[in-house]
Image 1 (tube, helix red, strand yellow):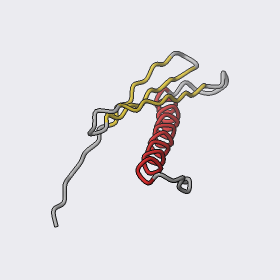
Image 2 (cartoon, helix red, strand yellow; image 1 turned 120 degrees about the vertical axis):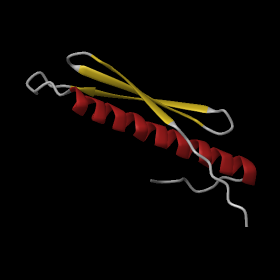
Image 3 (spheres, one colour; image 1 turned 45 degrees about the vertical axis):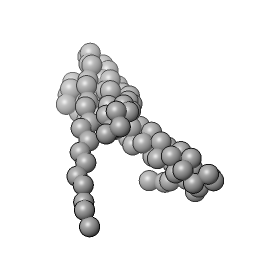
Image 4 (tube, one colour; image 1 turned 90 degrees about the vertical axis):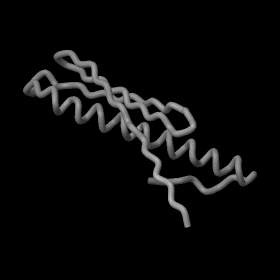
Length: 91
């Protein structure tokens, strides 16, 4: 039996100011498809400015959205290949 190795590289980019952090996550699949998702975090005015924490929250939210988009994409491909409606994929 032959096994193949496939790798995905996920890119995360951040834009920040004193109160907000925005993240964009992108993965390019082996077929060339790109899937992008966004996340954000807001710092409460009384919180200490910790840019790394904002990045972690915004990044996690973007990755969570990316995961949901990939699950939806896979679900649609299963339905298309089988010609029927399959059960939803849950995390």
